[in-house]
Each structure stands twice: as structure tokens, then as C-alpha cells.
Length: 143
Image (tube, rainbow, N blue to C red; front, side):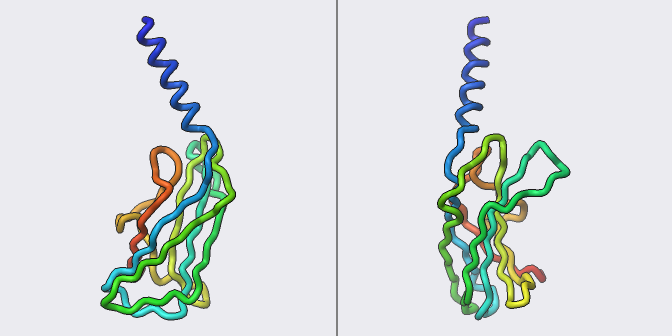
């Protein structure tokens, strides 16, 4: 019984420590692979969103946005772009975070999408064991 009580206390302490606010800073690299066609004059747009994982019908809130204008890439050579999203925001308790990454033209049309380690799915960051540093690999949205 005493062991069970200690286990519950440890679990509560760990959960409380995980909910302590920290910085919402996310850093990483956006990689444009060799196979991607030439890019010139496009914009790389990264956004950090915060959401409540226990509320299904509530939209996510934009926490930070970064735009890198005049993105350039030549087919046949890999291009790397370093980024830092938000320096001042803090992580809120019991919230989750994800980032989006798109290459857009002057009219806002999306051409390329960045995916965490080149794998499809939501790019979760900061909480729940997810990293604060990510590697995003761009892919053509038309393929």
C-alpha cells in the first residue's frame, strides 16, 4: 500500500512539473530537397499554434508567425533555412502546440509544405514529450 501511495505521489509530481510554464520558443531548419524545382521570390511562412487537446470543437490560437521573404532555391542543390519562432511567449499549462510551414507566392497560394522529418502529420512541438527543435522537409503540394 505504501508503494502504491509513493507511485501516485510521484505521478502527481511529474504531471505538475510537466505543466510548469516554460518558453514557447521553437527553433529548427527548413530543408528544401534537391528534387524541388527552382524557387525565387517566394515566402516561407511558419506559424506556431496553441490548442486545448481536450476541446475538440475549439480552434487553435496563433501564438507566433514568421515570414522569410525572397526565398531562393536551385534544383539539384539542397537548401537549408534556419528559423526561430517566438522569443517571449510562454507555454501554458495543459495546452498543446504545433507548427505549420508553407512556401507561398505573392498571392498567398501554397506551393510547398514543410513536414517534420519528412513525415506526414501534425508537427507537434513543446509539450507531451515533443521537441522544441525541429527539422522540416519541404515537399511539393501538387504531388
